[in-house]
Length: 106
Length: 218
Image (tube, rainbow over all chains, first blue to last red):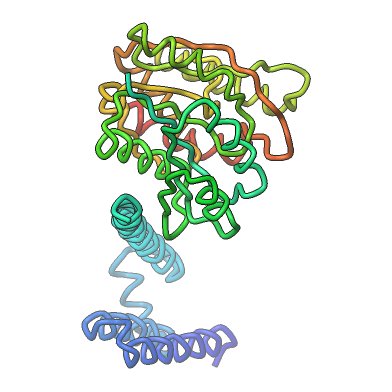
């Protein structure tokens, strides 16, 4: 096993552990916990089974699996960034209103 | 014309006492908005019998101004507000200039500080640069955008209705004035400089530049 594979598998197990903890604490909904677990398991299979990488390379017509991972990672990062930004703005608006209303009522 | 002075304050216990002592000699129509201070600001204000609205957490200058103005117009029946910083940088003797302009029917009055040797060069450049940029984009040259000494009538406040919670509110107000048909005048004000000198720094400028397209469109 290559060093990068060991590192990837260690990272995947660590993230699975983090997901489990947040799920048990009730901080992560069941559907989301399953979604992230599946994503990590798929990545794990891709890392361990080299033949699966060949199929993905031919599916996306790229020579290197890294390119696919980078493209999908960037797409994921953008989705998370926009979603986080929207949620922060929503929370900020609600907090502003709550604090201001309370200041004026007291 | 019933005019209320709105003073946003965040950790101003060092200066706000002496500022209010001078202000109360001129008017008792004063509201201080304590924006979640962690020092004794609220206590200092209440010791002087001034009404103090308190934010549970720090929201920023824009939100504090909004709370104060909403309260003045909706609950105190004010026809105009004059906003002043609580850090004792504004001379209360200049209030008469603002009141006079409001009585004349001007909707917005903006205080302009002298940009002399007492103001740091970087601040002068930042302030001037922002004024030139607003002039290029909106066709109005507002001489001192970060100045916190300004006044507006109730109808002007409705048109200005800013969204910024933080310090960038001063620029948003300038943009909204420039985009609207509100009548405004600029009056020269004297400024006392001390360690809490305000103006644009690079971070503020960056934040404002990011928000400018939104203000331009909205």
